[in-house]
Amino acid sequence: MSVITTFSNWRKSTRSTNGVNSCVEVGGAPGLAGIRDTKNRAGGTLVVSRQAFDSFITAVKADRV
Image (cartoon, rainbow, N blue to C red; front, side, top):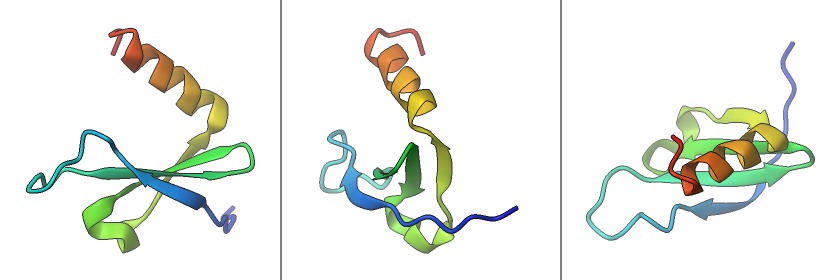
């Protein structure tokens, strides 16, 4: 099953700086997080639950990932 979801408020990683070619963006939709490659936005979006994304970010910040 395919569901079309519109993500908004795309934000680029704060780790992205000029001259760096490995950037990601994260966008939001109700209950979901979308993750895409800044250099290839048309290449697809990884969609995960907001809860899963929040757990991932918490683990990264705690240096568990």
